[in-house]
Image (cartoon, rainbow, N blue to C red):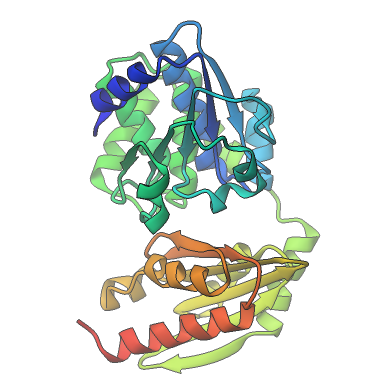
Length: 327
């Protein structure tokens, strides 16, 4: 971890105001890691003004924001001395907020997703750890390396972020278990974290999942079952539902007005046996839909504004080529 280098960079900027920005439809890992990073900044600089900004947040995050009393703004209304993108590594991911970012303000990136070609172009400093299970895990390491006390509320937020992105410890490493144990010792309440992540699926999400199944197209590539579908919203949830139904890989498109979103999910077995990363595929799909894509090996997505069907065709073509021609 490059914590001291991060501190050195911040010191050169002599920041008085910092904007910490998360991706659109910010999930609990984004919100909680942003919140914990703001704690780090306020401990580092006593008189710093830190604003947490996300164009919108998902349903689970709304509950966490309310419970932890986190203030999230929806736009950048001032010129900061430094901008920190947290749980995001390119400007398209932050939505319309990107249009308000001054060109002369240095950008820091802290993320655990696969780096995008734009990442190096826009950032003056970055910490990207693709092996981390969540961005919350990265923020934990930053706090530990500075020997800062992790207060119970911050420990709880980091635990929530880790639980969310590991799917309640479905995707986890031995190091992550060690981190979680330390967060519990710092005062995080495990049952409280689970409670805040527990939300009932609303009627519209249930309908989206059912429609995705109804509209599903099945593609058999080698020994694998690939499913594509389309909905108007809840595309990530629809993807997970298709995996539960038996798909090895699922691509689900959501289109409205001038926006195209494609979500992709794969089983852990598919990734382990093929080595194919959805993040790399969706990076290329992002270019096709006039946007950007990326993510993780088994969970990725792309946002753009056109060519939805072409984007799916490209995803299937790449997948077929990689399955047919293993390394």
